[in-house]
Image (cartoon, rainbow, N blue to C red):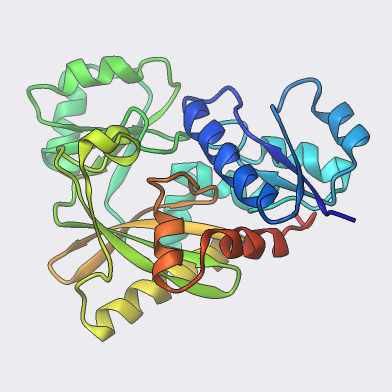
Length: 304
């Protein structure tokens, strides 16, 4: 009998299109390898579809809010069918950039300086605080979005105009801008999968640079690091994966500057599209796409 896999993709986050693409790519690969697959949205029909289809495992292909922040994971926990990627608590910790930053700092993991902002101060106050604590340019970002959604590198001159894009968020993060190389590294289960460097043609590795092939972001693998630097990078990546309490696959994003790795964030639901980094890293290490998916399925659990 074919193993039934239910893929949840789509959703209501700003990363809906990427989630749908991830779901399609995973479904195509599984169907081509003898699995019985159904794709569904995380809407009010989800529970009835699960009860009718009776999947062996649920593949969570959601990205961003609702799918990556512990919310859908709490629903899946109550259903009791093993699901892929991190559980409720780890997902919530990783998605909240302020909480994850505090975990990094508590455990001596280098990360850019930051403070949070709630739009209740004048722009002059904010500018002075940035000058004092971080300096310009500075990065502004939502606390709970992925894929660099609404992330901006700001000068003193354009700060006010960029802040307008984030006014719908109750609270945002103002972060020190670290120049240098964009390097990302992945873990699958207990395996240090590998790393990749990105050279975007754009100002930084933003949403367009990640998902638009016309952006022509250069992917470099293997990454030009000494053996010691590479081991350090993978050790940090593995450490944070475990500190947050993740399972399955994660990807951590770094800036490498003056010989030091600055951890920006950890992603518990990395994309699985044609332009996604984890499948590319995996392929370089000799693990093809279907075997990567099988490893993710193998780590499926109902353990929070």
